[in-house]
Length: 298
Ligand code: 13P
Ligand code: SF4
Image 1 (tube, rainbow, N blue to C red):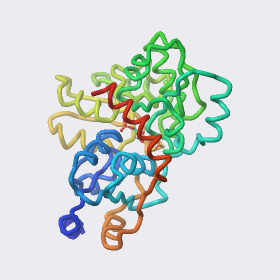
Image 2: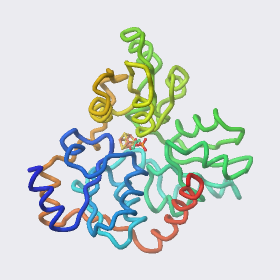
Image 3: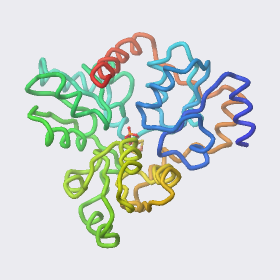
C-alpha cells in the first residue's frame, strides 16, 4: 500500500503531510511530519497541486486557507478536533460584545470561521510571543483555557479565557506526573501547554510537539517522560535511537488522530474524495489572522 501511495502521489503531483500524532505507518509514508503550523507552512511553500493532509479537520482547513490554489484532501473527513468543536463564530461574537476593543488571540485548533473573527492566531509554540507582540493590557484567548492560563503565567498581559480544552491533555493530573517521575526518576518531563497548570508546574520543559522533538535531540539527557499524545513517541524514538522515551500516561491517545489508515489514504488518492474547502470570504479574513501570526514569528 505504501508503494502504491507513493506512486499515486508522484502521478498526481501530490505531497503527503502527517501530524506528529498520526499512526506510525502514516508518518513513515509521509513527505513531511510536523506540528500543525509547520505542516501548513510546508504546504504553502510546496509546488504540489494536491495536498493529502493526515491530521484533523482544522489542520486541513489551515492548509486550505494558506493554499487556495491547491486541492487539500483529508482522508477521513470525520477526523475532527473536539477542542475546535468547543467554539462557534456565533458564540465568539457574543463574547466579543462583552469585551469591547479587546484583541482576540485564537489557537490554530479552531474552525476557520472562528479564525476569521479573530485578531491573530497562535500555536502552542508561539502563543506567549504572539500575545506579547500585541502590546496591550488585555486579550481574549480562545478556545483552549489551559494554553491561556499558561500564557497568563508567562506574561504581564491579563488573559481572558474561553472555557475549552483538549480532552486528552486536560485529563492528565499532577498524580500522573508524580507516578511517572517515581517510575523514572532520572527522566526529564516534557509537557504540552494543552495540559493543566498542575501538570505544567511539575514539568521540566513546556513545549509544542515539534519543540519536544528539537529539545530531545539537542539534550544530553538520556530519558524523557513525554506529556503529550503518544503518537509523538514514534518520531522521538526514531530520531533518537540512544535515548529512552516514556509516555506520561497511556491515556494520552487522541482517537481522532488515529482514524486515518493507509487504506484511507489510498482511497482518497484514487478517488480524490475528502476535499476540504473554505468559503472565500471566511478564507480571506482567517488568512489575515494567520498571516499576522506568521509576521510575529517570522
Ligand atoms: P502542536 O503539534 O502544534 O503542538 O499541536 C498539538 C495538538 O494537539 C494538535 O492537535
Ligand atoms: Fe484536538 Fe487534543 Fe486531539 Fe489535538 S490531541 S487533535 S487538541 S483533541
